[in-house]
Amino acid sequence: MEKVIDIEERIPSMREKRRRKTNKKFLFILSVFIIALLAILYFQSPFSKVGAIIVKGAVLHEPDFYQQQSGLQVDEPLWNFSTGKIEESLARLEEVKSVDVSRKWMHDVQITITEWKTVAYMEEQEQYNLLLENGEVFPAGLHYPEAEAPILTNFKDADMQKRLTKQLLKMDENVYRLLSEIIFMGTESGPDNIKVYMDDGFEVRSVISDFAEKMAYYPEITAQLGGMEKGVIDMEVGTFFIPYSEIYGKTGEEEPIEEESENGSESE
Image (cartoon, rainbow, N blue to C red; front, side):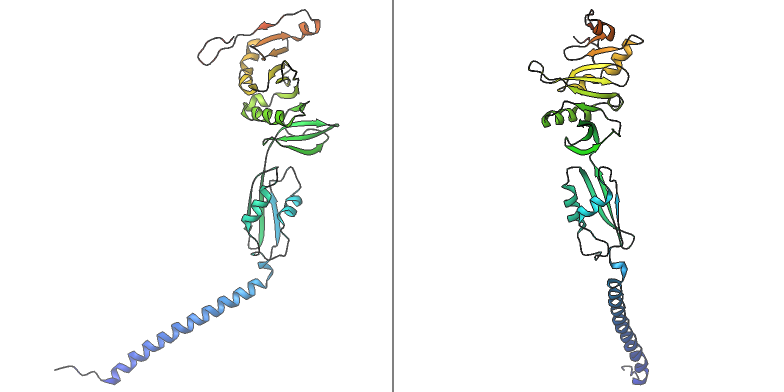
């Protein structure tokens, strides 16, 4: 015999289910309303607008320059621009190596600039422009060099500037910091020739094409010379040393310096 369920017993459970279902609908509608209200309040508040534009890493230009180039303005809508497009725009500047644009602290924007570093200075009309690591010349117009980098003289040709830049970037940091001035001495017979004044008192004569490779031996060569008189280290063909006294007196002959290659053999 089937069990008969009294309708009076079923009504309370049905009512409870209906009540829970109604509460869920109400909470859903209330949540949507609150979210919509908060969104309206947010977009009408100062927090939805650009509060500050922070530029980091700027050396070659003032921070305001990069802000202007970005096209960003304080108080413009914070979500009304693409950080990717601003990065692409700033990356087109010759002096910019890389750039990152991000939204910070609720309503600020940070622009982080990585510029091409300075590898040398180029004197022009008693002012110094910058030769950057990408081979481009930045017209800084400085009265005095600032970073630890050599001064270039007579490097008028853009191709020569870029070739020398590649050599300087290959060079050991300790040797690079000893470079004081590099003078282009190219002639028809030696179109690549350069003369280099070193901070430790020596003068080096070399060629652009393998300048970094030859200067890798510079510490060993100066160590061999020990406490001898300073002079010219000629690396154009082979390696020779001439004391300054003999050069100025015009009485000396070139003295070959023995170099040891990686396999221990003497270079000619």
